[in-house]
Image 1 (cartoon, rainbow, N blue to C red):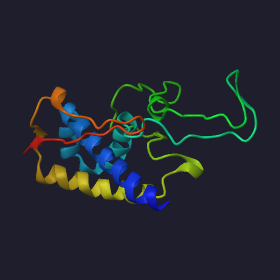
Image 2 (cartoon, helix red, strand yellow):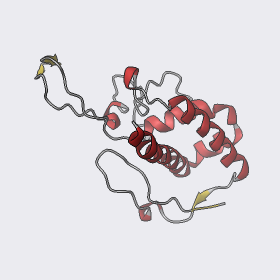
Image 3 (cartoon, rainbow, N blue to C red):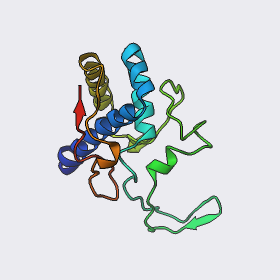
Length: 170
């Protein structure tokens, strides 16, 4: 648990915010809307985390008994790796899954887990980033990328998707 809190929590937290800010910088109309409508930030963050989740896969799961999912049998003890990125873009759950909809009201994304697997720090990270994004937009309303998006470097990894740096100008 200490490992997850100190290392994984930090990494995911940094990726949550970096990916959200980059997404806004790539969609200027949404960045301008949030700057003008800061009350939309809590809902917008949920959508940003759905749209560009930092966790591409959840922790492995191991069924205790054989189960059948959509005609496929998964044997007890098999490793099951769940794609958070795919689930967050499931068209059966999200209308227009490939569109960024900042005021998406019904948004049960899996970026912070779900049910008994919800991140313990989810309430804290939500509040922290509501405050941080509001402060960033208030302080730097003309924020933009300092380099072309193609030059951004992503950290290598199977389960996490995050930037090495996010160079910006104000």
